Length: 391
Image (cartoon, rainbow, N blue to C red; front, side):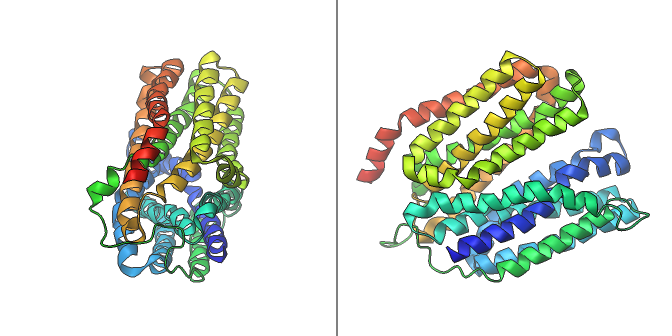
């Protein structure tokens, strides 16, 4: 588990820096953007950078190894963070956008930490390893915003430039920790009996499609509802910004807090039961959100959404690692990551127009569509297991 601990610490340091982008990106965009409509562009570009880089990141890791790619990405992220600080000093909106796009590209490598952790342990410890890496993100969610705000006046005449100098330091620290990652031959993957299979053969496996769908649905529904929540709460229903921030913070803690136990739970009850539990909690979120628009409706809905996301995502990742051989892992993971984060980017972009056109109630009903479709796919699990066993 040594590599898992290294990856969890590196994840915590890097993610703490990345938490600064959603916290301050909109504020900086509002100050520097040439038009109000562009204010959220720096934040959106981090998601675009993530989605665009997932396949190149996987291919680079296959070529030069995970450790070298992880370290190089963290170092480039430090440079990009300093570029954000310089953009603030120069009041340059377009430099800010370019730098946040580069920071988003680093997230593609950061997301691979969980696969690297899964590959370093035996098959029965995969879900635990994935959840341990996500605990690093939990620590980041708790500390990242506080670090950013504490350093915002480091350069007195340029508010928030110091925050991104802090991001650069965190990324450098993450790179240093990642030099301790050893990697080596994956321990938790199917042994290679021969040549790698064609990618289409890997992707056609029913269990691969189930695992991919679990991660896609968890991220899409979570991003769709979470992104719309502040608009619905604060703009439409006139809840205070303090109450809105409390609900979002509670949601983030609910997303990553279960990582303290979800890995062990899924290892005990199985990935199918873990997915089912996550799916049920997401259905419960929609039901509560549809029942009313009081503060506690929002709070309970977002908390259940976060816990459901965690169970569904961890279980999906654990299942995915059983569907490819060691020599196939980079291609299989690249398709999964591009599907997940491409869908997340689309869901996040659609949430704003959807809340204004459909309203809160109808938006939540729309979220039922992917949940119901995945529930149908999950019901076919016994047949899928049988077909994979014969294959």
